[in-house]
Length: 277
Image 1 (cartoon, helix red, strand yellow):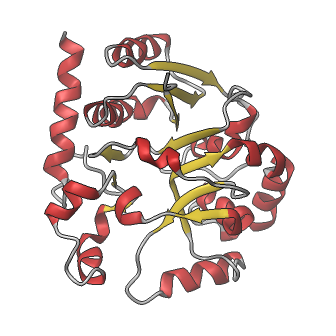
Image 2 (cartoon, rainbow, N blue to C red; image 1 turned 180 degrees about the vertical axis):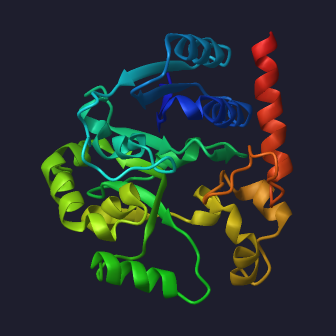
């Protein structure tokens, strides 16, 4: 019998509604069931019980893992980058030991096709599988390599979609190494957890196709041009699994009118309607 597919999220209370939208989009585009793990520090009992009931509607389980306040107490953070974003880096310390692989997702992601085939990747000795986002000139990639001194890395990987090889991560990812990296590079950290991921472990990340697994909606036109005009809206709707709403502007904001805004709001409204049932 097929086991449930394990998913990991890391949020604070301000992202509970967005998490519901992401989960709803996953459930609507897969016939499979999931074991969902939520890393947090401040989710109320009310929110937890609601999400538990919500996931149960779709035959999926949800577990809440409370992270001690002392973790990453000295890490750089802000309203845009709360400490919760760091928890994925040490998730293996809190997850069940019998889990060998898990898919981490940001809560600003929309799933528009079945995600389960990502678990078919054999990561071997890689710690993670993830995606780099496109650049017409390669300038941002070069600047990130210079800034983080990651000259041998294939690219600068986005941390919003990560297939985590827990067996290898438990052997290699070291909490003290992360603390030291933060201390030594604090002034250079622009996207803190993502910079840590690339700076320490970028050479151990298996590259996935971002047009499938981590489509950055800000670069719709770039994808279109770089694919020789093959990556049309029809192509995206048929092939892309995750739309990622990266950046400061978010699709749940009332003024947001960028690409795929209507699609996100469709899932958002539908998921909200379930609260009335």
